Image 1 (cartoon, rainbow, N blue to C red):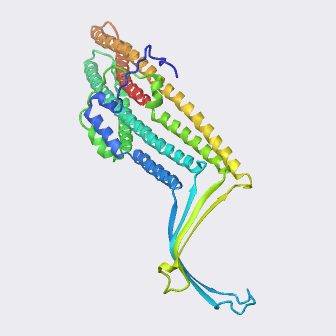
Image 2 (image 1 turned 30 degrees about the vertical axis):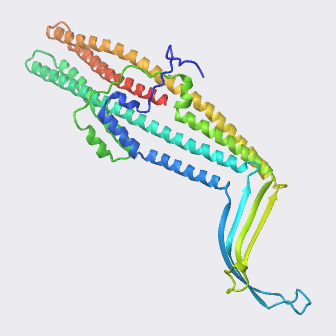
Length: 432
């Protein structure tokens, strides 16, 4: 692991608790949405059920380490052959047998095969827990990113609406000047092109807003109408977290990132399965025993004199199975190598995710600084162009170009401000 991330000059281990990182934005609605997602998300419910499934499988494997005891009973009536002996005293033609008792078997796990299987199941329980953590982290991050997108789109819609109102006033003014013979029709038509262009953007933004709200509702496991009503009020400002990035070393990703921890536990489980498959080559030694009431007559069935018990140790050693055991060893070994490669990939992916989020954050921040300067210059240029137009110094085409550039810059600035917060969310997600 590298000592520091490429996009940060210095790295320190701050040991920060990032389990509830979204609370740093201090937005009650965001906190409420994430709480709903954690409680009601279908994906999270599925992940939690997988934990229950893996725990049940672990109990199944653990049970193989213990004796198995069954209570059984049967009645048997037999017609005896009269030609098994030349003696005249061969017994009756029919005999009965009544039995009621316990039968037990216990495989003595001398070589640890069942222990290895149980260990593998235990690692898979841990992996399923990390998978659920990863699902929760992904859902929380998607909800937060969608929330920032919604607020950004609402802000851009508000910006577009204000620009449309301003352009409508200019069109009305130019219509009046045209009616009075003070300006040519070209000025009016030129102003209309900008007005209609700004109006055309508005439905696109509203479509993106609705789609983002509906996708958020799916993440929360709720009806779209329920979530849409939360955003019907006047748009709230875009949440801003403290401009301080969390201190995390690259090596800490190994224990912070749930996907890396899941891959590690899956690798350990694969190793335990390889050991278990190899021990199939060793002898299997078991104990069998029974304690029962056994009688040939119903009246004397359940009495002390009918008690019967036996103990029988037995063992087996595989000699020829058509290559089945060795094939299973090869298969489990291949699965182990795949798990190792997947772990290596998950570590590299974790580093890439952090670096991508960091470079996106810093470059977007630098872009915002330049866009802010450009926006301020656009505002000043727009006011000056209008003054020069009404003074007869420049024609309206120049005013139209300046206003179009102002509208584009204002929208781009708002979009970049939203992207900055979304990249910050991506940083928290990448850090686990």
